[in-house]
Length: 103
Image (tube, rainbow, N blue to C red; front, side, top):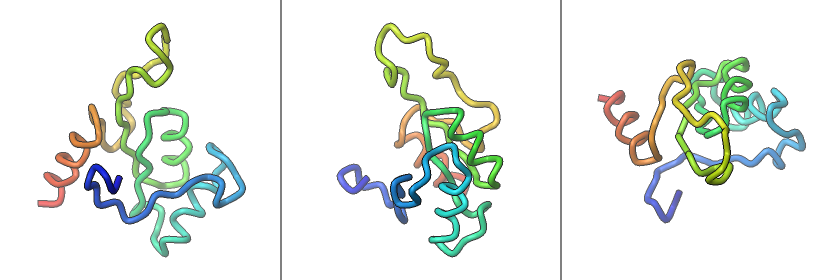
């Protein structure tokens, strides 16, 4: 994030919570550490199962496409997630969408 000049407030790792996605403790714990309600926190991910779990905990979600995430021969679904608050081709696209919404 720093090298790409992306101004994230914080990036959490599941190891911090000693629980792993999709355990709700990860998502609820992130919001709690930030001192924010779940709806004020967004999970950005390329995995729809993780996004669904975060959504169930009340977080907003952003799907970022990573078509090569599982290799060239993968049959994994990397199409947009219609349930996500945002769908982006990459982090630059997501930043543009977020900037546009803030205006």
